[in-house]
Image (cartoon, rainbow, N blue to C red; front, side, top):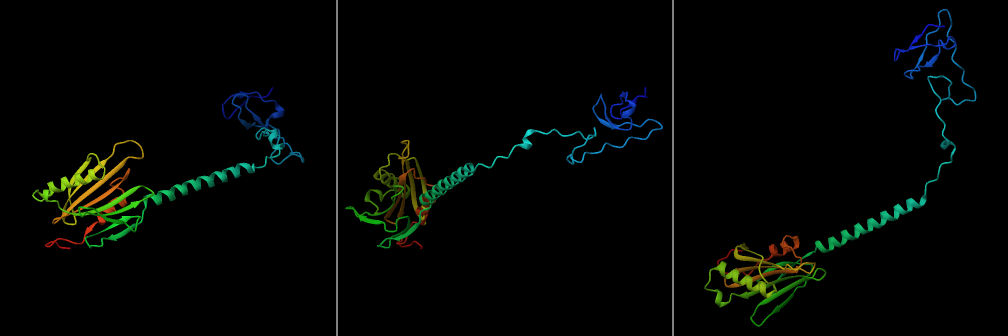
Length: 269
């Protein structure tokens, strides 16, 4: 009977047979591998030789346990499925076409080209979205109307020029402009004004009025009217269309670009 060997990891006392002294053993308590001290007066046995036909990683030493061989190492690897890559490629192309098409349509609808226009009488100039040849007409009351349209969005832009009617000439400018703007709004088919504001345009008193048709759906029509009083002449600037928003850049550009070129006497250009 040999002396017990103390495991250096868990300090468990182990009874190691003499033939295993001086070799690497596994502790029965903590399962750690350690080399036992040889018996006094003996020479440690040489490590076991690796078989010539064994793979380099294989050893019978307890300190390097042989890894488990699964049958998956002997299976032939599956070739990549080409159909999956073709499907991914087609999906990418379709998505790219959809995104590109939507971007193109949005750019076409929301980035119209502005076209300068100057009235034949030299009374004003303005920039119309998309249509370079607005139509001019005169009614029985002498009102000159210049219409420009965006057919793809059903938007209409117009400038009306007429002399201040006699019934408004005794009113303060702001009051006269308010009544004129509301009258123009209703003439354009607007029902009730949603917003109104006294403003200045090109140094002249002006009045803004907006009608927002509350009918749900894409056919909702918005009408924006600005009336400008220059001397005894009235300019009505109108923008109208389905879901038209005042903050749309081409709508703002249309109103901002409007300039009175035939200014009354006493007004600086």
